Image (cartoon, rainbow over all chains, first blue to last red; front, side, top):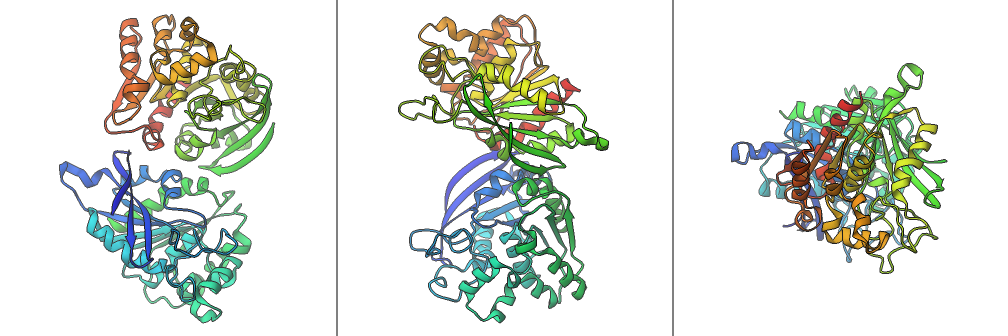
Length: 282
Length: 282
């Protein structure tokens, strides 16, 4: 692991690292914010952490520079880990047409089973196992107290990874998540290529399908802007509302009037999301 | 004036416009944040405003996306106007070698007197007169209650424009300002080319020289990171401290331990700067 960035921010440290990922078979970058509480009294203290999964086209840096989350993390005593959104590098296959919604920057947080993707595109295992093991080994964080959040494709990632592994996360939040990849063009394209035509294999990566069979219920907060141009065709929040109602899953889903799909929306509510996580992690 | 961006943010509106600038003889873009207070009770209310001047290589967008200022502006009821850092467009001459510290992105907030720069590079007049007139005409802001702030080259701009025009601003703050262009390589290069070799002509754009002859004293807050790699050679905060001491100008200059020149530093203290302005504007 190699440090490639370090900036003091709100009394804590915004750090960036590269490392060789065995799961993804390539070098990866991630960012981590360590709040001032880790150095309380000159001794490194373990703090709980929140994983942030970004959306299409993003790297680990978008959230770090645009969300304004460090202020709240510093107040609440949370570390924030932001991974990249796909495997990267010369040997990693990309969409042949360079599309923004498949391949590089668009890993969809699944384990691909189809070639040529299956060799690298295993973001599900990376986020769930390899990255947390590295974080636990290298930083003063308490991985037993972890929350997960994300935006758009990353909101889908946060919801699906947590719903499948409720013992691993104490809280989940999402901004503008892709609620049902089974039922939108982004999902059809990505899961169709990563997982193949058998739609039964897609269900393990569909938040609505997972809600329907969740035995354990987590605290979940979802925010969705009403002026989001992707809402009707791609995100489909009403499908998640219906799935929760049908399964009696008590998820808080808020429609936020006039907000769009941008980081201006995320920055407006990230404080409430981090406070929600802190309430579950402390 | 044409709207080229609009995002709801913290209950207010982050807007972006382009307009034809007569002073700069080119089309310019600027951003403005209007806090929720402008729409209080369904009636547009005039709010005070703060101008933000960015540093080398920036446009109007860096501050808007990275500083996290909207949260505080929404709480405090401040509009924030962020202009670009130089004239722009095909007809505007640039540094022949495309240097980052002269020409496009590096107007230094002066009125150039030397060719080929004098035809477009008049950022001083643009910031002081043309842009405020447009803002007053188009938005529900009270231009009689204005503060000014900025970073690096923009900190130099904020200090010099306000020190020269204390009747126009009620408060001034700066992050990591270039304190004396007369005494650093960035200043030597830029003022030497924009204004010519007569260093007497540079003094009107040098914060230290202006402090020495200021009859009216404004509330001023300056923050400078101790880990800023530009501090010793380019920014030279001690020169400003000495000028204030010699002139008995009561400026608050804070050295912030471990912070660098980045927006992570700005975001950490922009809340205190905006509160400082609000205290003078309300």
